[in-house]
Image (tube, rainbow, N blue to C red):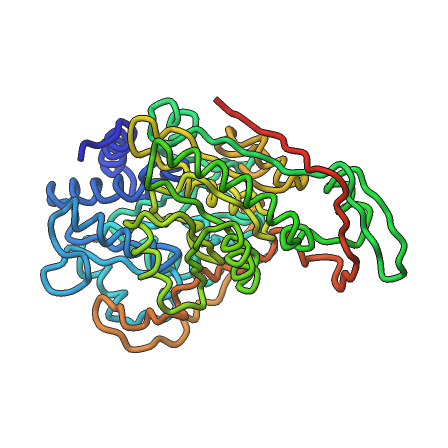
Length: 459
């Protein structure tokens, strides 16, 4: 497969950069093909005799599997950490369970360390130290790896902390990247699809409280601001779910007329909500796979869906970052999470461009103020208010590296299903969710009349 322009250019710049510097930071829009670029860079450095091995770190088991497949395809050698392998891919979660034999790898060999979605690894701030993943990178890899490649499509943290291995300007504290590939460039070069976002609202939202008093609000934003209703109340409301799913279904039917294997993704709030959505879809004549972090067979189900012609997959805590299912082209966003990072990563799942005529992506979600704001500044690759961090004064962290489980030299045995979940709570916990403020809401929503839709078209 021929490299995309940006991938070739980034590999060339990184190779040149490594003559003078050890660390390289690549910001490329979600769905641009960062994994393939990393594999090509590893192949180039191995071929030039500048490294002996590659170790990749990723936020989930699904992304780890994607790295393994891509490196085998590109390098042509095993990438499973066994004899004759040129490297291995592991999750960030497993970092805290690695024994000394794993860390000696960085002393005994010349290693390229690749970090996918590095924003999950905190370098600390002026109020708290690094999280456990960032701490391990700073302590055990930063000065030991021959080269590092840090990659992110959303290079910021919701807690305003720094990112491990990232460099920031002084005194402004703005992120410095070595290579940037924007969504605008990706769409213009047909690397990514054109995003189309539909925001659903309602002009007459009634709320009847426990006392039986009915109050009416002019839209969802006013309801959330002036009542005890939570965002979770909205995203789990059956009428709202049916409306958004119907819009997504209609669009998927249209897309499949020209792309028969196109599929839809629904991001749910929790496991019970996911199964409710599956019921709603069945009522609409559809069938859907449900994958959650609690299902031990989630990865095989995702792999099966990737190559099938099934229409719908419903996810909770899965398929948000790095998971490659190129036939996804329609997304229904019913998660209670309202952080800009999560929004962009989910949107990235439907942006992967495949062939001629497959150039549009569709997302359907509520016109909640934060989500609306995130949508309107989608073309800002690094939103100004997120481009810096208060990192210039670090809180020291413990030098104690903790207890380690025994592992084999490359170490894969510690990656149980419990470690495959994305648990960077230091970042996600500061993002807004439906239940972060007014608990115990017991009112009933009454939606009178029709919904209101607003379509955002960016190109």
